[in-house]
Image (spheres, one colour):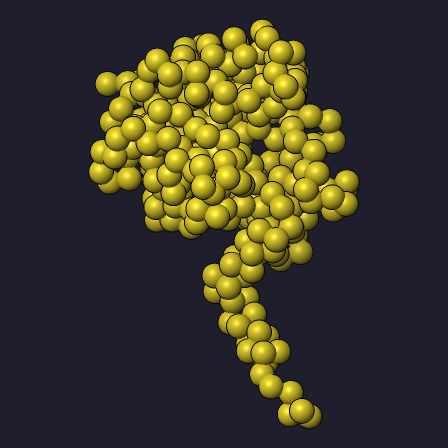
Length: 302
């Protein structure tokens, strides 16, 4: 049996430039989706999937993330004194979530690129596999995305990438997997990823989205990438490059995720995530549907 996955990394050091000017004041990870900041959705997914050691890799200006998960007994006591027991319970439950996930924070150091925070966190993980989830993704699924990835890893003992079907015309937005073999039930062996190909060049109709099981071999490739980062055309260290280098010699798999994926990293998709969350809310959903129906109705004056 492959080693049990107990640890996860959430890279949260990005600038959120696609959401400026909003993210000048609020880290993109703290923007609300429904009644929770987006990063809390990710933490809840990990804890629900049995992860007991979460590292959030941050940069300057991300103190609100730590404040959100930090216990605040004075606030909870004040809410209870005011008779707002439900709100007090909610405040305490978020802190308990952080305790169960054993959240720790790590400042990012090294070259730019999404491989650097993974490598930073791996220094504390030894030779254990880990999950890597981006903090601007929200998944709604009967079985959490993280658990689906863990199940695929348990079957293969190899790195696993989360995949979702895509319209081929959207291929310029994603890393697109090169599929070697379809093993059924959404599990595929991959030859690597093609980064943001033209639609006519896309090797499949799947997108690699925000979720990975990373093994020590991928970490070794990241170290190699970092050692010569200055040779890269952008001067950045990419997780995709490490995965492709690894896949050239050893097995890498993709797992098609069952569920709905919402990307909150750009304005349009963030609004869709907000709208979908509001529609699903038992109290606010009916209000929103009524509002939309009234404003879609023909104007009697015309």
